[in-house]
View 1 (cartoon, protein in one colour):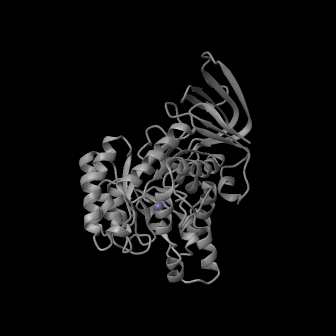
View 2: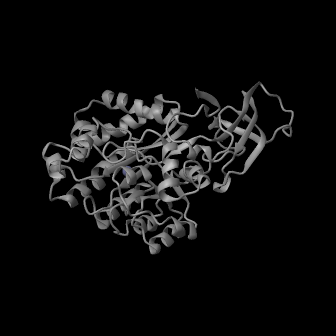
View 3: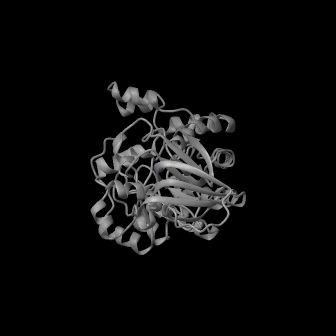
Length: 402
Ligand SMILES: [Zn+2]
């Protein structure tokens, strides 16, 4: 089915720039774009259907490249306790913190995890997301991490968006391995990862490199295994301190290093050299009321592309809108609205290793786009809260209209 989408403006986002075409049209054939350009200049090939976009502004479908959308329970009561003045020790004693999410995730059935995640993903979809990455990391056992990875695959099969699955078993040390972190890493490398990889459950491998999680030496063992299995890696790095995790990730040709508040210039140079994308997560920065900002000026100087993501998770970033993250990237990290839009399209695709098919609007690429009822793309970063009227087209088919 060849469709002519006419009467629109298009921001193609090629090379991370708006490249605005004011009087534009696009032709799609099934899930692919076959042509786009100035209205009236297309060839007269047979068109099966025409769709009038009423002057709307078309951008690539948004890509949320770093989320923990599958988890049991939530931490809203912990949020309330914290704001009522209770200490971290009191909250931990009441069963709070990441362990509460691990327990709730372990106790939830696949069906329960699926249903709760579906609602959160629905919220992201309503805001223009057509591609999403989801990490495991709250099961922390062979059975429960496997359960999370199965749920991620099931969500991808049933929902009208593309979902990538990342194994984050090296997220936190489970209680039963207390004091035996190296044995836990051995289990992941020797038994778990090869098994999940053989079942086709893993698209990439991630870890949390931080004093309160895993050391660079432990992370490197996970990366080494991933490399043997032919799986790309990425890393939670430099969020709370400088451990040079981003440099380590770059040396393993990581798709991305994420968070990066404490990133240093030496590691930025390595990221540039190895084409590792910087993923900035302003929601966690905001929710934790952090003050150390990621080194945006240096990332620009070294031409390391910056992606923006929700980091949707129950503990530090309960974010249900990627567009809100564009605003926060501008207000908190001083990105331009053009950089923010590139961060959730072109550069987010790079952070997932899918630049060849997604993230920009060009002939040959996936026909996943949003037609927004706005006049300039800066509005996507400018309006705070609420919803913007839009049509979301996923692989050539309209999947949302409001
Ligand atoms: Zn994360």
